[in-house]
Length: 322
Ligand code: NAP
Image (tube, rainbow, N blue to C red; front, side, top):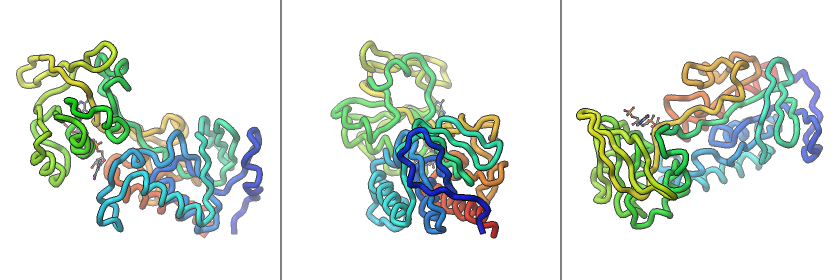
C-alpha cells in the first residue's frame, strides 16, 4: 500500500496552488511519455510537464525509420502524438508547463513551475538534451539567420541554396540527407576523415549526388551581415584557413543534457548526465531519470522509451513498496 495522502488533480487549474501528485514526470519526449503510459497503467495518475516543447527532439525529426512497428517509418511529430494519446487514454495528464525550481531535499519533492507548485511523491526526470554549439564567431549572431540546429524546422528556407552541415555522426548525416530535398548542395564538414554515423546512413550519403564532403576540417567562423554569407574553414593537417561562400550552416555536433535544474542535488557525471543504474534510480530514493538526460550512449527513441517504462515501473515499486 502507498503511504501518502493524495489530494487528486481537480485543482490543477488554480495558478498559485500546491498540487499533490503521486508521480510527476518532467519532460515529454519518448522517455517521458512512455513513463507516463506505464505510470498511468499502474494507477499512479501521473502528471507530465511538457517543458518548452511537447515531444522533445524527436518531434523535430522528419522521419523515424528505426522505431519498431512502423515498417514504412513514421513522422517524429506523429509518433509523439501517438505516444501522448496512448498515455492519456490510461489517465496520464499532460500539462504545458515547465519546471523552474526543484527541491529534492525531502519528500514530497517540491517542483515549482511557471504556474503552480507540485508536491510529488516520486519524480521521473526526462528532460532530454539540447544541441551543442560550435562556439565560433558569428554563430550566435546569425542563429535564425542562416545558422540552424534543426533541419526539419528550417530546411524549407534553403530551397536551391548551398548549405554546410557540421558534424559526422548519425544526426549530421541523417539531417544532411533530409536537407538534400531542398538544397542545391549539402556539404558536410567533418573534423576527421571518416564518419561516426552508421554504415547505412554513410552509404546513403555517399550515393547522394547533392552531398559533398570536406574532411579533416573545422569551421572557425560564420560570416555574414544580416544572414550567413560564408564560413571560414580550417584544414586541420595543413592548418590553412580559407573562406567558402555559403547560404546556410546546420550544426549537428552532439548534445548537452538538460540537468542545470538538478545541479547540487543529484549526482551527475563529468559531462552533466544524471547518474543512474539499470533500475533508473538516481542517488535520491524516489527520483528516477530516463532518456537522453541520463543516456550519453544510445540516444534512440526506442531506448529512451524503454528507459521511461523502466523508470515508471521502479516508481511504482517505490510507491507501492513492493
Ligand atoms: P554524436 O554521435 O556525438 O556525433 C557528433 C559529431 O560531431 C561527431 O562526428 C563529432 O566528431 C562531431 N563533433 C563534436 N564536437 C565537434 C566540434 N566542436 N566541432 C566539430 N565537430 C564536432 O552526435 P549525434 O550525431 O547527434 O548522435 C547522438 C546520438 O544519437 C548517437 O548515439 C546517434 O547514434 C544517435 N542518433 C541516431 C539516429 C538514428 O539512429 N537514425 C539519428 C540521430 C542520432 P567525431 O566523430 O570526431 O567525434
